[in-house]
Image (tube, rainbow, N blue to C red):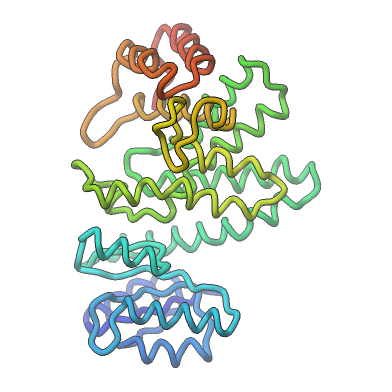
Length: 336
């Protein structure tokens, strides 16, 4: 069945463009001119995703999503994923929208191609999230193949939000598995930390693309949004009771060994061991990947940064293993 998309906007031109674009892409589209019409519509019709304008007369987008969420709670309905359509790019509006439960923002006027891709990607991502717990409940042989495929696909979808982190999660997972292997983890724990590494950035689902892909320096508010992704990731993965350690990487990969990290300010061995491993792998990949403002950092500089971070940013024993891996990579092939 074609996914049901509802677009709410008081601009007839925007409605016409969205309807034409999404219908051509195979979605079942309903266009409404205001929030009151949406509230009437939702009582009788299921929705897979809602595109909602912020600035509208009578009921603006923020008032509409609040009314929608209250109705969902009162009627024990699953929350409809909401993407805000906005001509504003200010962090305050984005922060308010995320607080109210929006999943993303699309800037107006929008490219038809971008609109199709963003809606498709978000729906696919939400489906993968729903399927993840079901997959890990399958018998062991199926878990080893099917859930890994789901997790890898989910990780690639997360990385696709950032134009400069293609393959980041998989590389972090591979580096983490190698560090764990050299430290003495058995094969089962090596595969476990690989899975943890794949999903360490899952919380970036809740960070607007405009913030993730901003080429310049982030404002304090924007950095505040970025800093929420470990908690968001932990919330998402906490539902996967069969693999409780998935939460470990998502929540604590930005903790620092000296206690100055986030979100909980954990220090030393209070930071779970898997998170300490992933922190080293994550930092290494960040330095050895392309960014909008720089190329891959030279290997000697990367080595110096790892050395400098020992005992402060990183657990020394895992940093030393990473340094051994760097020393063995004489042709500097271990990068994006």
